[in-house]
Image (cartoon, rainbow, N blue to C red; front, side, top):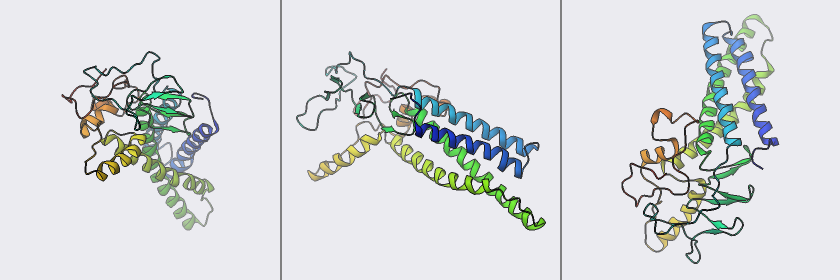
Length: 281
């Protein structure tokens, strides 16, 4: 259930804590020294990154991804909703028999959370929560700052390890810390995984897709080509509009996880709507 601290969450927090301690008190202190200007600056920057990572991770874990109101009913005559998603078979409006209500566009039922989630992207075991309309930006910012912190730590690891090896060769000492090896084993695959995850979600955002919609779009594209048609994702409004739809209208707040989401998550502007400069509330 959402909000419960599970083993994967403990693993994530333990990894963050270990990497933070090692980066500050082994890598920075052993190479630059925490009392020097360079060491203090690197420690301050990495601490700020770690704080943002923990805060955004907490938001992604504990924030409701978006619940469909019990009173929701699709209004097929509403001028703001010219497009309604329908079932692949039968063409009826999408209805969730498990939740006993209609599904808004882009909403899906999560079997793990046992309810429908607005603009559902996927269920993430690492946050014990769905990634949906309300916490998608926090999840994305968490991954972004996680990548930044990992790259920063990786640079410090390479520099500190090189410095320690050079010192050992000059003084015939054994100062090379086993923490370097453990940190590298943990940091390298984590950095690669987060970079791939961030790249994937940037790709999705630029096309205004969710992970679910990507896989549905692959099948829709194949079916369209089969009959000689061209498939276009209906929510793709152009790169800038797509970015605003997820990150917010102000570019200065794009990397701030505390800003309010765009819209209610019940209706979304489509490529068939005009104008494209405003968003539904």
